Structure formats: structure tokens, C-alpha cells
Length: 94
Image (cartoon, rainbow, N blue to C red):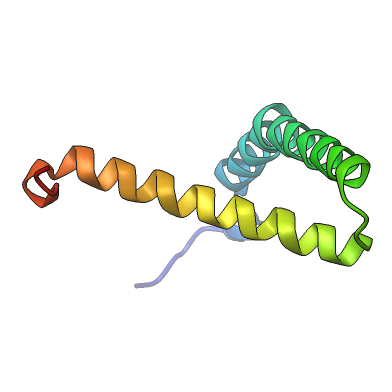
């Protein structure tokens, strides 16, 4: 293909409008949703840690490990509970 007109200026710069809009949408979601959820999680984490400190005498590292373990186990239990409700044929009969 041969271009006979001087159209080089039309193709010199790539149009990044769609990419800029996508990035803006991602940043907006991060600010409005993700950071709010992260702030709520960290507030709850700090409250749990403070309450545990009032009950037991543990180092910060041990408290962090304990809270993470509880959080993981709760997530696993929630996942298994949702699997049981989605697949009732896997439920054990009492």
C-alpha cells in the first residue's frame, strides 16, 4: 500500500483516550471502594489487637499471627458453608 498524501501527522501520535479513561475508572474505584474497605479492615484489625492485648499478654508478633490465623480459618469456614449451600448433595445427613 502506498500513501500519496502527506498524512504522517495523523498517525504520528497514538490515541490513548481509551487507556486514560480505563486508568481513571480504576483509580476512581480504588479511591471510592477499595480504600474504604481497606480502612474498615485495618480499623477492625487494630480494635481486635487492642482487645486481645487487654485479655492476654502476648507480643505484637504473636498477636498478629493469631489474628491472621483466625481470619484465614473464618474465610475457609465461610467458603465451605457457601459450597454446602450451593451443592446440597454434598451435605452430610444427620
